[in-house]
Length: 57
Image 1 (cartoon, helix red, strand yellow):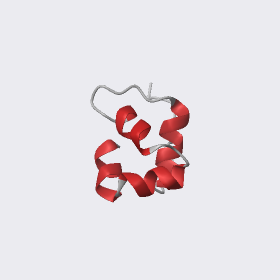
Image 2: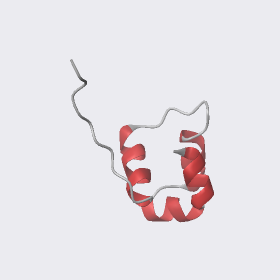
Image 3: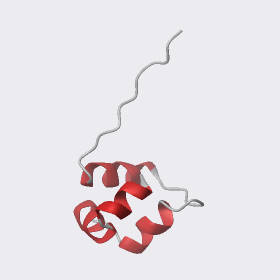
Image 4: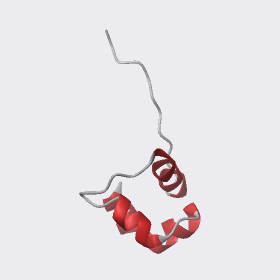
């Protein structure tokens, strides 16, 4: 997700997600630990959704 956000322009993603660009860089870095709200906001700003479905038996 971080690679896609950087490729699309972190400043634009941050503005669309209403987040600070520095906090997004930090959260999406290899050592980052983003909160679910940050993940959902960034995914939404990039035009994606997150879907959860049951694992097969």
